[in-house]
Figure 1 (spheres, rainbow, N blue to C red):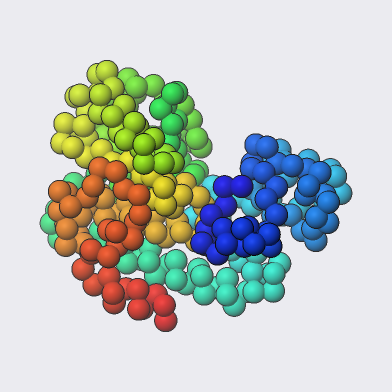
Figure 2 (figure 1 turned 45 degrees about the vertical axis):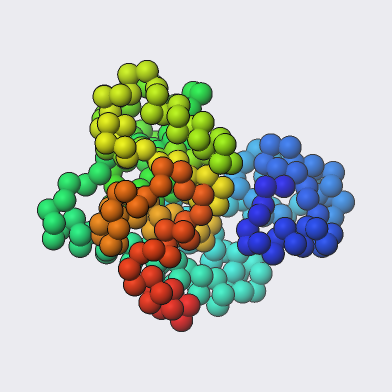
Length: 272
C-alpha cells in the first residue's frame, strides 16, 4: 500500500489493474493467496517465512548494502526474463554514483577539504540510526561522508548524549510528509543539549521528506539518487552551489539535481 514508484503504479492501482494487499506490517495473507501468484517478492522478513509456509514460492530480497541492491536487481531480471533491462538499470545507477563520488573526492583532494561527519536518523522517539552493514551507511560513504555510527552494526537506537559526544558536522533526518519534516527539524535543532553540536551551530541540519524520504530509505534503483543527493548536501561547492543553496527541508531531489552544473550532460550520458 505504500508503493508509489514509478508514478505508473498509482495509475494502475486506480484502474484496478494492481491489487493492494496491505503493507509490511499488515500484509493480508488471504488476499495474497487468493491472487494465486507464481512468485511473491518482498523483503526478508517474518512475512516472507509465513508466505513460504503457506505453500507459495517466495523470493526474499536482502538489502544490507548497495551491492545487495545490485544483486537483487539482477535476480529480478532473471526471474522476469528481463536481464538486459536489469543490467541497463545497474549501469545507469553506477554512472550516477560514480559521478557523485568522483566529483566529491576530487573536490576534497584539490581543496584539502575536511570530510564531513554525518549523523543520519529516521526516527527521534527513540532515536534510531543506521550503522555499518546497511545500505544507508554505503550511501553516506559514497557521498563522501563519515557515518559517526559506523562502529555499530545495523539499525540501532542511540542516546542523545552519544550524538553530542560524536559531534557530527551534518545531521540528516528522513520522514514522510512536509509537516512531519518540519516537526523533525524543529525537534533536532531544539533538542536539549544539542546546541553544542557543530551541525546545529552551523545550520547544517537537513530533513528529507516525501520523494526525498523515499529515495533515502528505500533500497532500490533510486539509491543512486540518494548518493548524489547526499553528496550535494555534504559538499555543495563540488557541484557549483553553496550551503545557502541547500534548503533545510528537501522534498524532491530533482529540485537540486536540476541546479548543479553539467546536469544536462550527466542525464544525457546516463540515458545512453
